[in-house]
Length: 181
Image (cartoon, rainbow, N blue to C red; front, side):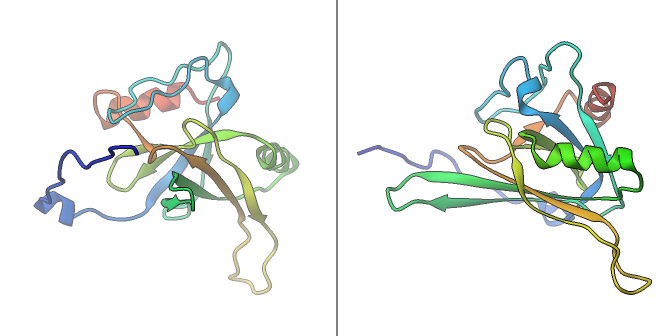
């Protein structure tokens, strides 16, 4: 039998109590196959994304509090634990080019980098990728109804979403934007 034990605790500070929920306006999407080396595992920050030559990240922008990212640990009957990761992307598609991007995303195996309202970057689907499990769009019925396209991307991982940090917030943001097509 495996000897799995807790090896440290977690404290709470006043800063922890002042955290806010939600994501910023943008998420960055990358094709899992475009990584030249896998995203590192373990309990440290990810500091670099090694994309293959001529490959990029793709930025999906919306309104503040539109996107959503969650994870949930589940335990199987056999005792295996997996981390189910979900990112919900809500985007405005207004022309045939946007429609084509959405259609590509429907069949892609991706990782998604989200920016929280606490200025933290997380990578969802870092090892096994995320794929489409649900998608909706439409015109709405009333004048004030939503016309956004909502795509739900999910995947199972061994670890919680990875934290991405290159020195500080500004450097990490510049790093992501420099790798965006």
